[in-house]
Amino acid sequence: MPEQMPALDEQSQRLQELIAAHKNIKDIPMEELVNVGYERDFRGVVSKIEEVREYDFEAGVHEAADALSSVYEKAKEDIIVVINGSSVNVGKSFFRRTLVEELAKRGVPVGGSINAYTGLDVERRKLGEAHTKPGSKPQSVYFSEEIDWTAESLTEKFQRQEMPRYAADYYIGIYRPDVPFREKQLPLADIIVKNDHAINKSKPK
Image 1 (cartoon, one colour):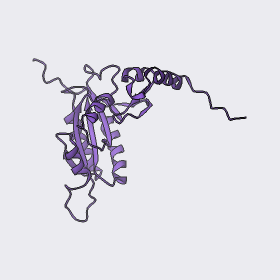
Image 2: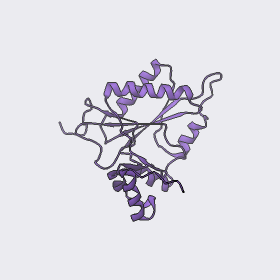
Image 3: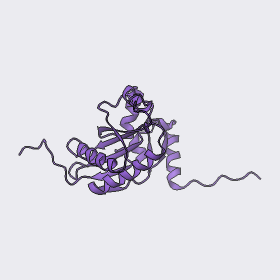
Image 4: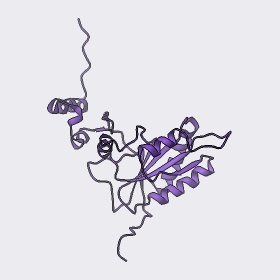
């Protein structure tokens, strides 16, 4: 007697129904995937949504520094970090500067910022062409500040060949309480930081 396949849980069953309705998993709108508890990354890989922990500013700095210190110990190439803000004036640059200071205390070198997250720029850093100091560990941390990046928006960039073949190694989502990330649009983030200190510089005084 052939072995029976285990029954799908309700969440998996709903995903299978979506696939059947759209014929191709890549054609399922992101919002419909999110509604059944799944997300799709910019390469088209679908996986269950995992809860992303949220921190205040200070705790977020320490959490990110802990994570990056661990990544650095095992890294064989440069580390790319994306600070993904919900909008402008949410504290991306201040968070980066504070995190850089914390990394320096832990002996983790920072190579600088990536002003344009392009394939050439990231590949140059990943290949280590920027490092010339002999006898030192060549890996460094590089930062890119972006706005409102989601898996869906990166899919579009990847399809237009605006993305490098390397994904970032760590994503930090940051927002002001009055400017949250958009509903149904999951930010790319390993952690999310709620920044109560940020000021809307564009707001008239």
